[in-house]
Picture 1 (cartoon, each protein chain N blue to C red):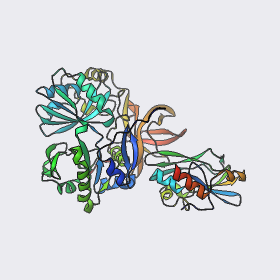
Picture 2: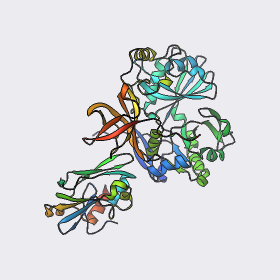
Picture 3: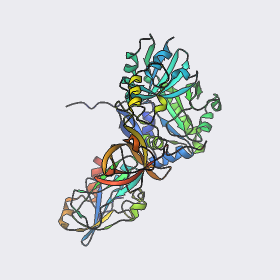
Picture 4: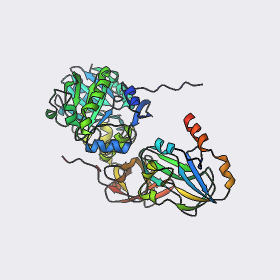
Length: 126
Length: 367
């Protein structure tokens, strides 16, 4: 369920690092808690993200939830698919419905995030 | 340490949990927000049939030879027009014209009225009505004596018909009968809060779970779903039905809330009438209007509305309209601007996003 090569935050985002670029998304647990997702608000390419700061938001029918950046760096790509098909976040949160790609400015930040097994313990205990 | 206040529960709390519902604190009540998903539940009601637990709603009964006089004095619609077996939407107002609550008044008999009120308002409504009882009526805060289920959607009648000998076709819209469902007493009203045809039934709490299960079984062939408060809200918003604490509250009058039709100024004195008369004479300054988002984003409850770049009002309710595939909402605007077709902007996370005022209701079922 939760890929071993992802790193997880307490706010239910994940990041997968390929070389210097982190691919960022929200977890399956997060999409389940939110319910039907109807809108995704993402930053523009070129935005400088900061670890732990708001990156954008995800809206379900009922509520708005902030997305917090798991890493710092420049946003180099956003997932255009989510503008027209936000429901993909409910269907494939760990794959095709990634949110943004960030060029890492501080790769060591990854060490502060949780492993898949720690994250599963965390949501089990939440 | 302070003890957490225990949430109130309906007789169907166990049933919701067994169905795997997502539960929320709704004004102190532990209520299901969704079961299978808000969108799926919304579509089930528009296209087929849905079942809601609305047992948290309150019931207030007024009895006595002068029952009509008390009801007509505390409510803004004209209860004199009600025939036995008929119901109407009305307002319970303060002297200053603001809403204590919005209510459904049912005439059971010449000396007996049954009033359905909002869950979170029932105690203050009861005290409010009692404070004007100079008519020697018996006023009962009867919430605990009733569970209420809503069966709503184009297949609501076919579903409920399988469980009752009462002739449902004979019950016209906004009428009710005391009949039976599943072999037990039920007050069956052809009312609802979804914009669809359907029924709201009042039953004894100890019968609620059995009836709930029997309605789900009876509706199975039509594709019935249990529906939570999430879809109840999207359904009522599409139909532009007011929600207390949003479109109406103590600071807003029926004239402002686009509910002038429930303020019957041609009837003799009622609580709030003088304030409404004054407001009519002076003219209202703000009024409820519908809007649709034209830019990307969802205008939600409490967001600021801009006209020509300046703050001009606020969103009372907003969200996706699953039937219409648009993002819609209701907002207060200066009265001269509260007409369809006007460009406005909604402040969404510090960004103005384009919207346009729109005709309401957003959704009206084909008759």
